[in-house]
Length: 212
Image 1: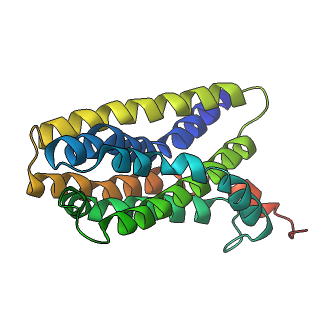
Image 2 (image 1 turned 90 degrees about the horizontal axis):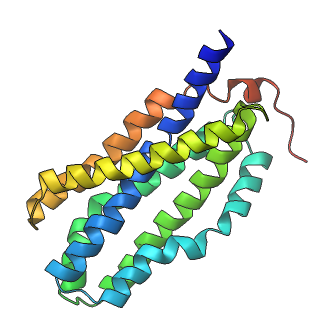
C-alpha cells in the first residue's frame, strides 16, 4: 500500500511537468526555427527572447516566499502552480502572429515580444518554485531524490513528444497549422493540471500556519 501511494504521488507530481516540457520544447525546436529560418527574424533577438526566462529565474525566490506567506484559499502551492502554468500557456496563443511580426520587422514587435516573454519567464519562475516546494512537502527524504529524477524524466519525455507532435502537425511552415499547434498548449497544460493537482497539497492545507 505504501508503494502504491508513493508511486501514485510520484506520477501525479511528474504530470505537472508535462505542460512545462511541452512549452519549452515548442520554443526551442519550433518557434526558434520558424521565426529565424522561415520568417527571417533576427537570430540574436529570437534567441534572446527564448533565453529571457533564465534571467528571470531569480524571481523564484520571490514567488516562493510569496506563496509561503500568502496562501490562496488556504493553499500555498496549488493556486500558484495552476495560475503560473496557465498564464505561461496563454502566451503561446499569440506567438504565431508574433513570429510573423518579428519576421516583418514591424515597429513595436520586439517590445511586445519582450513583454510576452517576460510574462512567460515570470510564470515559469513561479511554477518552478512552487512545484518543487510541493515535491519537497509531498515526499519524504527517503524517496525525494527518486521523485525528482522521475519528474525530470517526464519533462524530457514531454519535450520529445512535443517535438514529434509539432513535426506531425506542421512538417513545413504553415501559419494556420502553426496556430493550431500552439493553440493546443493551454489545453495540454489544463488537462495535466486537472489530472495531477487536486489533493496533492491537501495535507499542507490542513496543517498550514499563518505567515510570519
